[in-house]
Length: 575
Image 1 (tube, rainbow, N blue to C red):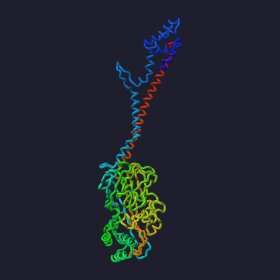
Image 2: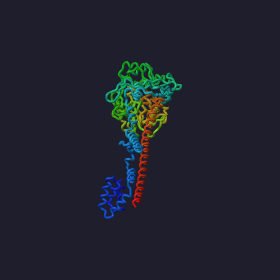
Image 3: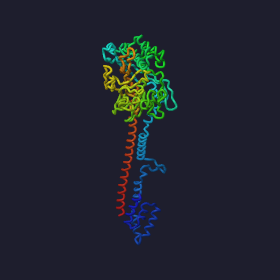
């Protein structure tokens, strides 16, 4: 406004020879201002003062002054002028558009910065009594199965008679059982953990086992005899003698006919009955079955994180049997189970370089899981594929860290892990099915092993945000690793042999429909809705702000054009 007043004042001075202040006073003053202006001009005038006054009066500047003021009050543009003497000024539409635009942009920015979906999701991960995630962990409503494949010895008579150099094995299976996993006797602790006792009953699935029945009979190793012979062979003669006498009297053989259920769950024998009676510190049971021992959780107790301090570790191990380390191993690399998963839930918010831990009692250790670098989609949910690390069953030959898996300084060949301590002193070692990735010398002990990387490798499909397992397949083989048994009756042919007993697959083919739909909503629909709301707010706010700025720009442009036109009209009128 002052610039335009100065402009008009300059024009006025040019025409009448007066000072700019006089012109400015004429343009901007009231009736009193006009009087003082006249005094100023009269002081500078001479004899032509009467002519000049007459000429000044002939030009009426009031309409121009009112038009300039009405066009260039920017504040007035955003507010309606008071009407009928009221002093309140109301914001007009342009101001409301601009305010709404700023508000929407700020809301969108706050959603982006604070990420309310992530905050709510982290809160949902915390274990609390009655919470959704806690109930899912306590009794997972998933279809969890264990498939068991037995090894039938087809040339038992020839091998025992010395007519065959090696045993010929034949895979039989799968015998499918459903595992009803649950966490019982739950206690919440004050340090952000929850203690529980695991429960894993198995139910035979006839429909999934084909034509196989639990009463099928096969020729298989006598686990009780070979285990007792393995231990007794290291004892002095006066201990071995009565055991050998008992073996001869009972006529028990290292290979005998057993039903599938007897081999998996055990059956009473003379040897186990005597061992249970006279050696209760070693044999605390009256029957020997590999699956029965593998799923014996009666004395176990575990502690898991609730996620109270760090939401991402909820559902992961804090301790097993009161310790974060397994007693059978030395060195943290081999003994640590802290932050491992039992397969119910893995770490949440998995980063691209993260490694995971998986622990089951039957494995006797926590296995390191590594990403294969490829993202998948399982039933509509994003999944990252994890596998066991390379050389996981190495005993230090390729990975020096694995030296701690050598029990009492005795390192088994590559591909075998000694788990004697977890199977009640039985000479048991784990391998991958059919000795996959094992030392070729191990496979040479028997005929019939057919390792297949496609069929015998384990994998885990895990949602990287929630840590939810979408698909599991964990495969191991149970073997007997026997020392020199030449001094034990009926067992001489098994000296220094690795005898495959069975292999199993713990598997979850996918989430049930009810659970899948729930997690599709949590992990796909809600995040998409969050992004839609955030970007919609930013876009809508930007559009409103752009419209408001455009309206202001157009109005100001029109105002400047009007001012220029007024200036020209004023110049023409004055001339």
